[in-house]
Image (cartoon, rainbow, N blue to C red; front, side, top):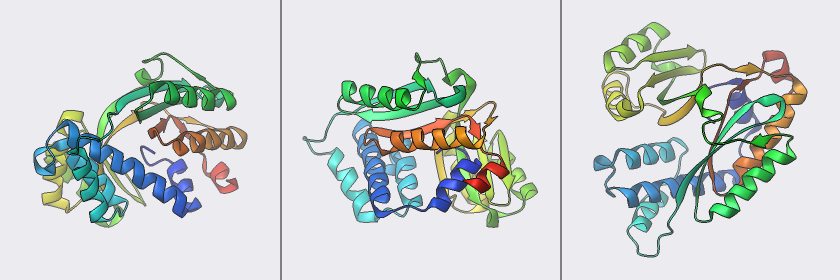
Length: 246
């Protein structure tokens, strides 16, 4: 999930079972393969691949699995994937963006549409939801990286646009085209980041009640279980009292 909402914290507390971890590794490997196939197989010469490898390492993916994914991109039988973005509304009109990477457009569209429909939501046209989000680079650091003022000064020096900090960590935002440059500059000041990636950042979030949160959690779980779905982004937030019940 993008961002650092209470939803992400709830997911973390739920824990990741082996099956979920395996599926996550599969999706990370797919991104690595596609990034390497579209550009240079050397992460130092391919910004997208560098980000994909960093994301994989952040999830403790073994180095040999990462290397195999890169090698797969250079093999003639590597699958051709199309990147798709689906936009729609979940329960109570919550905006949701689904990014997918697929070798079968009909299958993926059907699965995503079905998931929304069963949850009481609906898919919209491209642009119907994303206008309420900003496409930005996000660089994450643990709380131990420094206090809010220290990280803010480092971020400004590195060319970032904004910083959000709380007791769990720091999230630094920058323009999409500056992500690699800002990330590298920050590493010289704060050390290696937890994660660097492109996200859809909601301009405004909507707090939800328990019933709505449960419906949305179920929808997002269904979407994320789909092998073709890479990321699911939303604009809802879970209040503390609702999070406690979840």
